[in-house]
Length: 443
Image (cartoon, rainbow, N blue to C red; front, side, top):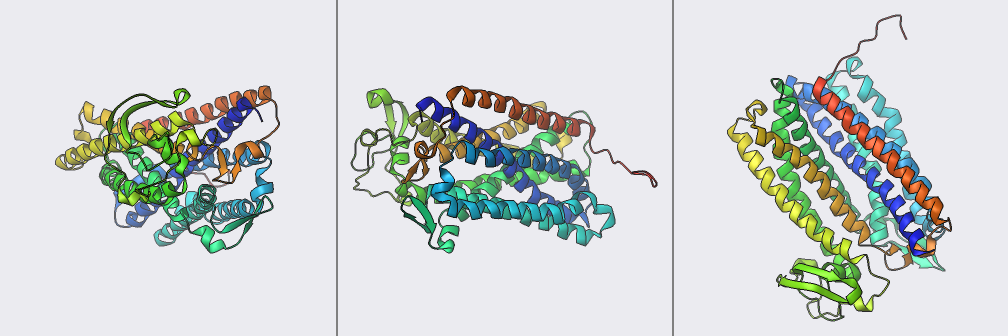
């Protein structure tokens, strides 16, 4: 497998995976927020108005997440044909459980949630919405278990080039619970910032209603809570992963020569071709104790990991960009919450700058999730299964021209889907929810 074919295959797969994870996170976060709205809808007309608007966005996210999952399953076999031969005993049941869980909850509960509100009591419909949230969480859980296992292959043994399951409970542990938590909180953060941005647009040209006010109040609180919890979960994830992935640590520092862990650099431009830095001006303090790195080393350096370390610039910059984005988001969210509290959580009183700030929050949250998940996935390269199976071993023999053509087509299709989602969201924001009643005697 040539370097160009490897890059093209990886770009195809990560594009599908990233697109699917984004809408899966949006779907997961919306499922639980809708459940919260539905629980309060019996006592609050505002919560019912908010539910009726955002359930449309949930349906859009569900469709796009499902659309992205199909090519992803196909690419697993076409781009990486050797993967199932090496890890089929692990990946097969997990993918099967994800598909089965999604099929069950969509078949049994989703239709009643979207179309059965008028036919069910409030308590029963709230129970159905809760079942959809649980089903969505279970679907995401199996996917996170597989992604976590690829980062840390626990619970399975490598026998004659193939992984065999030794202990399923060990496999369901590891970093899977923390990774699921990161996914859930990231989805809540995306939804909260999206709610604030949509509310800012909805109340720009017309007076707010009770639904806008409850969404505004919930969104401001949820953004701050999600940022705090996500930072804690990422710290726990780093404590578990960093001691197991010295190549990622070496790329983040960066550390060129083997030895005790060097202090991370805040301002530096690594020059991979020279095996050193173009410049370095500031070093942070030593690695904190929670990172779990041995204070006296040894830690393998990049010069001793030639060809077996992740892409240096992407890994190095994405880690720092994620930290910067988290700080900026925290500052903007804290200021928005303080101003919202002073305004009595009334979005009509927002200034033009305040509305722009809420819309900026949504885009920064998207960039933070892309950067964070990009660092997690790219930092695992060149391995498909950390430390044992590389992507080159399981890659396809398809020609570079065909791979480039499919990647171009993918960009067009996913670009059209993302644009369609954005335009439909803007249309719904502008015109609101239009109820459609079917007359008797008509199909």
